[in-house]
Length: 141
Image (cartoon, rainbow, N blue to C red; front, side, top):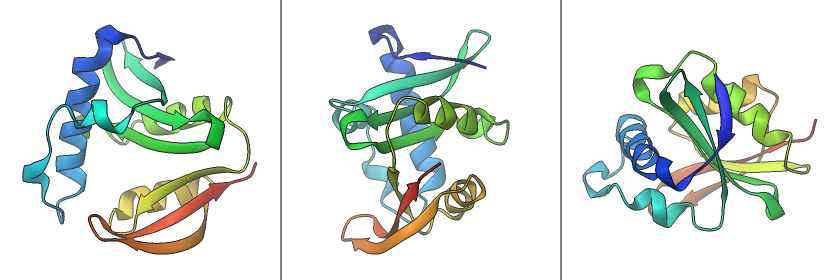
């Protein structure tokens, strides 16, 4: 997989990945309210990298570099389990400071397990009225 920075020509593809991945992962939420342009609203001011296999974009990660905060990591549902998320996360971690932080919805158990397996630890637990329970996680190494 090639990791590269976002270009404006990638926008439509990343909108689709974000839309499909959220609908597939967050089944306990009101997924009918999701829209393609949510990607645009939810990544304003963030640095975005994407993962490309041959000519297909299969994943993206978005981070607020100044805050060492990873805001999004999404892989096409049909492409999960191939190491694309780990590769993108490692590329992002090379560019942001420590401790790196993120918020992971507690009911997204595959994501919680993924981050724990890679050495992330839960530092706080909270509840968002819209999304439900979440974990704040940090990575030091």
